[in-house]
Structure formats: structure tokens, C-alpha cells
Amino acid sequence: MHGVGKTTLAQLVFNHKDDAMKEFEPKVWVSVSDDFDLVRVTKAILESITSRPVEVEEFSKMQHDLSEQLRGKKFLIVLDDIWNKGDYDLYDLWTRLQSPFGVGAGGSKILVTTRDVNVAKFMGAAGVHNLKCMRDDDCLEIFERHAFGELNDGKPVNYELIRRKIVEKCRGLPFAARTLGGLLRCKEKDEWEEILNNKLWNIADKSDILPVLKLSYHYLPKNLKRCFAYCSILPNDYEFREKQLVLLWMAEGLIQQKPEDNKQMEDLGRDYFQELLSRSLFQESSKNNSRFEKYVLGWKISKVITCNAPAFEGLAIHLSLLVNLMELRDLRTFLKLNLQYLRVLSLNGYKITELPNSIGNLRLLQYLDLSYIDITSLPESTSTLYSLQTLILEGCSKLKSLPANMSNLINLRHLNNSDAYSLGGMPPQLGRLVNLQSLSNFVVSGGSDQSRIREIEFLLHLRGTLCISR
Image (tube, rainbow, N blue to C red; front, side, top):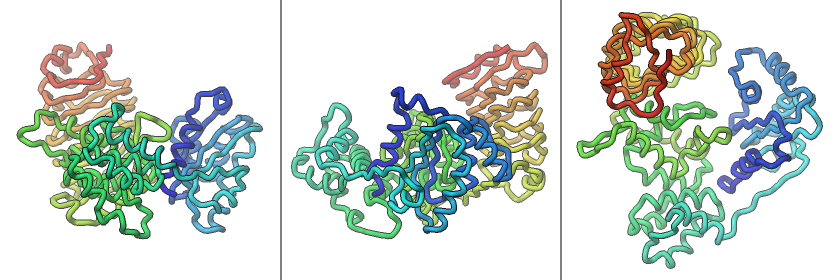
């Protein structure tokens, strides 16, 4: 069943620190889900082992490279959440996927999680561990930990009367207990009965979405529903950092500041994120505890509500460009399209050596990610992106200079130029960017046409880490 703890148990095994687990090198985790794409899964395994992007396009070459990486090594590969796509299809996919695995050392293991016992048969599992639902007492303990915190206090006066109903709703599923606890924790105690009696508990459909997740979304405030719906454009296997998602929400105008709020937008965004996380609509990454990923069932909800007009009332249509290209030869043509309403543009990792001046025509752009591309400079027209809040230049190792008039970007709040090793200095009058919240690296230069270190004096909102180099 969904939510019984298959992935959680596999994570405990994968991250265990005992001597037996230390024998496995490399260790790889891949989330498969309903999209068992042979190329994607193979590429993910290879990238996890080499810790760098795979630029090979031919599948046969990718498999050859993977075989060479595994040769003679005792490896552990976790394939999380494999679905049965049909008997022949699954057997064929598995036969082709495991072709490079045979060169590993004795004792290598492949661990699979699935809801379908037939998956285990077709993959030739040496052993099957069937998870069962939790006992009511254990389920209640999980619920109370998330509803009342570690101190286990603040229980409603009628708690003894509704305990049984809570246990019934959890159905022995630890995920349901955690999610229901996170949901009720955010509500007033007099609302608990209403939520536990909601008719959504009794509605069965074919989408496999647990009722508790529907309730978790149903009781979200409108602003959080909009933020969650926006996340449906993210790719299926995408991992993200909290700050990254908050900045995207900001760029799309989804974080609403009220006159009485004494918080920055970034802090409000973190509050939004933590509430969605507490309701199990996000989950921590299986591979990296500083990153997060979508919970598959929660994303089914967001895919449905994205098509629902009320959830997107007042929002512009979002364009998600998931381009699987090793080169972006038509970038100039792309930027000449009628994209004047574009708020977010990411060219992260593409093989680009020059940006056209026409990028300055994207006057509503608020989030620009140019990480890990081979540009040596930014066009001067970048200085006319007056709405820009976030500029990411991380890993632009060939970047030598920033636009001379960059101080015009007075709405800029985040400038990430970490690992831009060739940068010769900061543009003049950087202190005019008084809204800057984060600046990865202030590069000190003696040039008269660049900012001196005294410009930092005016950046009163800077927080986090600041590196001052050279």
C-alpha cells in the first residue's frame, strides 16, 4: 500500500553506518516511479557514481561507461518505487537496464521497492520483504509526535473520545499518521472534529491518492494552494533546495506580503515551505538531506489542480520548458519569441558561450539562472532587467566581467556568483543594490571602473555567507 513505509525502510538501510554497509562502494539511489524511462534511470545511476553530468547521448555508450564504472566494485543500487508497466514491458526494461551490472564484484546488491509482487518476480528477486500495516498503538505514537511535538502536550479536551477515530483514519499507515498529525497541528482544536468527519475520507477514486493527502490539500490556505499548484511544472524526478523554490515563488508573485507583516518575502516563503513540508506534500530527498523532492501522491494532486481554474485565479499561464538538449543552438531565435511576460528563465547547464542582447527585452523577468554555462560576460542589456530579483551565475567558471550598469538592477535581492573563478571584480556602485539579501562572493579589484570593498557598507540586508576574495 501507499504510505506503509517502503521507501523509508529502504532509506534506513541505504544510510546505515555499520561496517557491512561501508563495504558497498558505490552506493546509488534512483527514484523510478511510474516513469520507468530506461535512458533516464541509466543516466541517473551513472551521474550518481561519477558526480558529474552525463553528456553522452547514445544509450549504448552510456551503458558501456556505466559498466566500466562498476567493473570489479561491490555496489549497492536502490531502485525506488518501480511500477508494473505490463508484464513484457517490465521484463524487457529490466533485462536491458541490468546489462552493465554483471561486471560488479561478488556481493553487489540491488534493492527494489514496489507495490506489485509481480515486479519482484520479473526482476528475479532473491528475497521479498512484505511490509505490513502498523499496530494501532505505534500509529498513534507517530500521530502524536507530529500533532503535539516532542513534549506531547496541548491535547484537546475531548482527545480521549476522538483517539479511536484518529486511529481509524490512519489505517495502520505511518505516512497517514504523520500527515494527519501535521495537518491537525496547524488547526485550532475545535476544528479537529470537523476535519475528522469530512466526507473526503469516504470518497474513493482511481487515482491512488490517500484521503489524508486530499484533506491536507483541502485545508491549505489559498495562498499555499497556489504555491503548491505551481510546483506541478517541476520535472518528475527533480530535487530542489528550499531557498530555490522560495525564490521561484517570489518571481511568480506567489508570496503575499500583508501590511502587518514584519517579515521579508524570503522568510514568509520559508514559512510557506515548512507548512507544505509538515503536511507531507514535500519530502526530504532520499539521497541528500539538504534537498527535497515531491511526494509522488502529492504531485498527483498538484497535477489535477493545475487544470483547476480557481487554484490559479489571477495567475499567468506557466510555461515549463523541459528541453533535453546537449546544446541550445537556437537560443537567439528562442529569445526573439513573444515572451515579454516571462518571469522565470533557467538555462542551467546548457552549452552556451554567448547570450544575445535580446535577453534585455524580457522586462518582467524576475529569476534568471545561468549556472554552469561557458559565457565570459553578460550582455550590457542585462542591466535593463529592472524587475530582476534573482541572478544565479554559480559555476560560470569562464565569466570574467559583469555589466558596467548592473547597479541599475535596484530590485535585485540575490546574486549567486559562487565558483565563478575568473571574475575580475564587481561592477561599479554595487552599493546601490540596497535590496541585496545574499551575495556569494565579493571579488575585490583595484580597477577604477569597479566597486571597492567600501560598497558593502550600503548592503544592510545581506545575510547568510559572504566570501570576500582577492
